[in-house]
Image 1 (cartoon, rainbow, N blue to C red):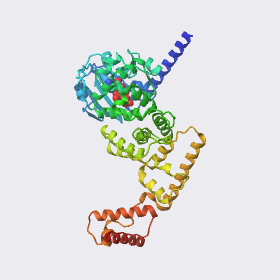
Image 2: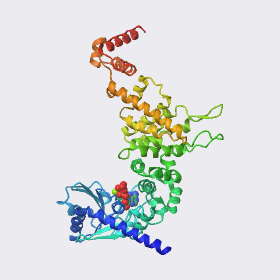
Image 3: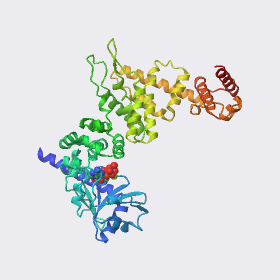
Length: 486
Ligand code: ATP
Ligand code: MG
């Protein structure tokens, strides 16, 4: 039994190594000449870290990470005249970056950093051996290397058992996890991120170290946290990554609104746990994506109900309500994402989707007026396709008939939007008179009143659909006269 499982492990190892060899052959155009250039001058060069991991997983892209015993100034000399372009923004950390025929190359000198455990950045020092460099990396699956020889040869170097960890699908630190996370607390969040990207699990010792040390994530700048959070939520297994953050306590430090959704179930069991509902909605939204992972949709799905804990009321006759949780939720989204320094447009879009996610539930059996349908589509604007997905994903009832009825009602709404759009070209909802025409008609100079008149016309347009110019002028004059007489 033991023997056969070992044999099959050997088989899996060999298969993985063979597939990595194939993946690296695709990059032989860059790996061969680059390895030869370094070897000629007596330096070692290794493909390393995420690049080796991804080659083994058959997902190596066009950005390649290398490590070397050459110092940055030597690396610059070795690259110049060969790469298309190189830059040194990472030189303080020993990194020279370059582009060669569309491939991104990063070459970092062996590191042997010290950490003072207070400041955010390590005291960068260079090392002299590959092993010293590898042992300072975050996880063993990220601490494998491939030596690139003078003759184009490739030698797999794995002193820390990275391949075994990869085969087992586990994240472990090269040394004691407490030391590693004390050196750089961001690694704790990277563990959740790799769980989300790779579907790997944390080794128990890693999990408990993070649980012990989660509050140290506060030492990391929000910019670095935000980069990892985006990678996490874009991962194929995003839900697992969120769970790791919540179970270890990392989420309580950086996204406290998520674990706060674990509401106590009241004695009547009247409402489902908002936390589990949100994770299900995130997964369902992911399943509805039609192409690349959608950052805006995923964040909106995860956060759509974060207003619920604060708006929860126990109603007199039993039952629970969450009035205006979409309004409160949208505000909370803005506050949190601003604190995380998310780009403004991304924040606005996510908050707007959260704000709109509930409106469909007033649609009932389709009693909305055309005006209400128009407003739904215009308020969503460019976000409409995502809003459709979010609302559909937000249905997590186990009652199959109820679920089917909700989806059918949403089909009906989508069809009505399409019909109205076709008739009226909703994308161009705007007043039929522009600012100049308004000023001329009302005999007023540019100023706030022009804006108010424009807004009046837009509302009218939404209520009624397209108007001809005579009607628009008549309505505007009547509005102006009634304002004057007030
Ligand atoms: P991806 O490029 O998909 O984000 P990656 O594993 O390549 O994933 P990078 O952030 O590009 O991650 O880092 C490249 C390599 O550098 C990692 O694989 C790891 O070996 C090492 N590394 C990166 N950040 C850290 C860190 N905070 N602590 C220790 N090692 C790190
Ligand atoms: Mg990388």
